[in-house]
Length: 187
Image 1 (cartoon, rainbow, N blue to C red):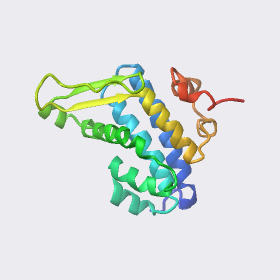
Image 2: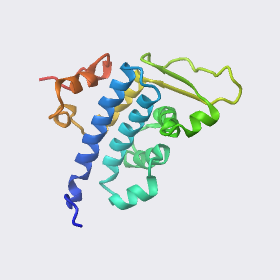
Image 3: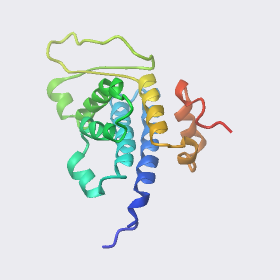
């Protein structure tokens, strides 16, 4: 079977667009209290944007085989593309997002339980589970928003361009209570 798109020069566009869609969906899930789904969707949003940039130097096959859904590994490779920028301040956020991948299926949640903290507040205080050994998952939507804005800037992504075709509600999800989105749709 011949693939529908054989020109890999468009790969970044498709990854970025999918990343923006995951991002809007993740924000919708957050505001709808769909936890841990929101964390998993935001994980995939970041994954798609990082991989979009990595398509500039890696084949799609290598990207899939070597990095799969490992956000931390993908992040380390992505940072090499911007070696002159200090991106280490986002390492903990990426690690926190990566942990939500384990909640993609209910297996770990059923076996180990989970204490999940998801807030709109930037830089929240760390949370702890009252049950010893229970995994803790914590994310700040404001921190994810700031991070996505940095990724959009680094990758020269125009949110308005990639959001074309989204219904108005989808665009609203990108900017609702998002201090980082002030310039995304400026005319």
